[in-house]
Length: 233
Length: 108
Image (cartoon, rainbow over all chains, first blue to last red; front, side, top):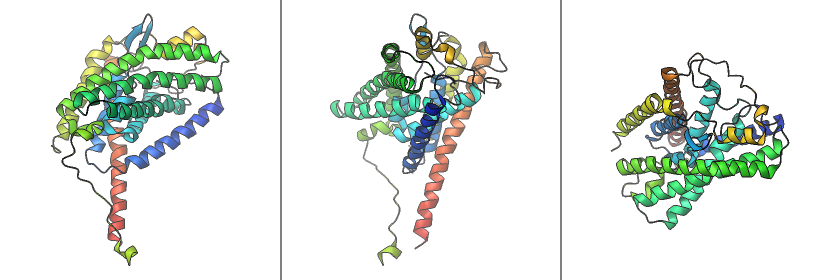
């Protein structure tokens, strides 16, 4: 769903850039609260793995392909805040080095392929996990459901943004239906790939899966900022 | 368990590199969902070349060659760069936060 330069007018591109910068800034602040020493290499791995998976376009209908976005995968593995950072890095490298997704469209792409899919996937994942059994397969299923919904909602977001600030005036409903229709199919692929990978990681290293933390809480070691005796005096 | 997070990450990176080398040449060359809709709805002409379109790796190629190994190699380069950036950005966050915590605890 990488948006090239030229699809959106300057106002919308700049506005999207501001929104993206705010969301990335918030994610950096929130991610800094997690002091686990495994977070940095896991963030690197998730970014690199999603970059690799985005090379793998799968056919979805005649003359159409799709690839993983990775919002659900990243959010379940490293949590939603680090997920937004990972996906923003993937999009940055793709735009800067590979000319995949425009440079002026970077903010739009961060909204469509980082913020919206991570937010949708994670909210759906958390709700589904509450309903489903507290087992590994419950976590895998919840990941798949989150993954499935994240893609068409991002596609609908594109249609809304294009209606607001697209450089070509088109019937909003026509673009919306075309985008959602195509991306429901891609969402099925997204769900399958996400489920396969979450299942593999939960099966081997459940301790490395943020979204599976409810399955293994015997050792919960945290670091906290010590109270300041000078303020208590 | 903590010590072999490195083994896990290394294994994951190897798998990502293997996907780029051996599976990405088999990826579907068809337009993706957005490109398809852009063509069908008639806004594909609005796309303009990115200002990075002339870069050596543009289009997942190496110097304009995206066939076979060149495409796979550009993918591996991207994997290593995203891994480095992801590790560095979150690693720096952790260092900054640790410094903050230490400066609070030692200021007493």
